[in-house]
Length: 428
Image (cartoon, rainbow, N blue to C red):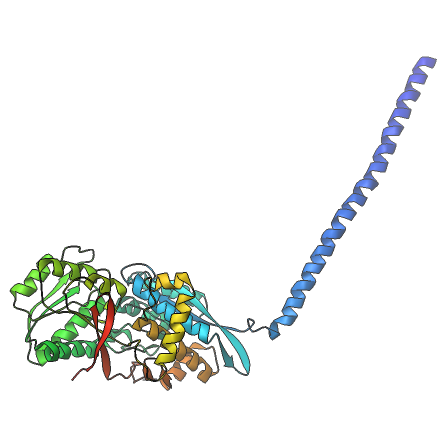
């Protein structure tokens, strides 16, 4: 019995020891948690104080007030090369003038760039993306088809858009929110028809455009109309389908039809093939293109051949009048200061006309925002309608349709790997 009692006492003593250990370890664990959480709480407080400090300091920062300009341009697809050059002009303009004054406050101008991938099918989704980014005005696009497709989206959202080089008349027709800084296809078609007749004494012309491309088909029709109105004959007005690689049959049709010139306002992706294949076939007819042809891919294709290649365009980098000279020198320095800029420009520092137009479109947008003293789309639209400003490509004002008032175009020749100014041409 005594042994049993002694055993029970031992068990009780052991249990009391474990209980004591447990009661001591619990406070230690709580203290440890308190010590661990204290620094965390301290860091959180410090972080909150820093955030509060940043918010308090924000009004003094130029980055606090922001107005967004949407860039609606192709970076991929058939027009990707031209789209990148147009974007470069806008980016340089943003570098030159990165802010605007509204209501006595400085607003940072931020570019929101969306790739519309060249095609009309992708235009609406790219436009919707820009609306989601809360832009106040849109610039673009290179390519009329995708601009036409997006136009109603901009109008419905009451966000104005400024086309840079989209020349099809339908871009602005019936759309109070679409403007443009370039000349139109009816004018450009007339310019090239006049040039063909005056320069080459052309009485017959062959015309080639891409089926389904609003820009090329529209420009071709305007050339045909002007050429025939002046007494010329169109031996054939043909179209090729997207993805065509062999143009020999078309070129042979031009020769067999007795054409004096070929007018082929295609996208950049096809122009080099037309030129190279014409040279290989021994076609000696002058080939005329529209504004999209002013690209190094075209001058490279002509280089080393006897082909006579001429394009109509909006600007010449050797123009020393007005704001042009200062723009060209600054733009070249900016291009050469960044290897990616040079790559996007085709690997050189040649100033493409579409880059000058991109620059002008940005400057017109900023001027309209400042005139409106607002970031509201309708207010900016109203300011654009009455805008009159001197820009790199000349004085700018808009007619009742939102189109730039233009009277002449530049004609350039692709020769020896570059474009050289040839003459100033009117539509008469």
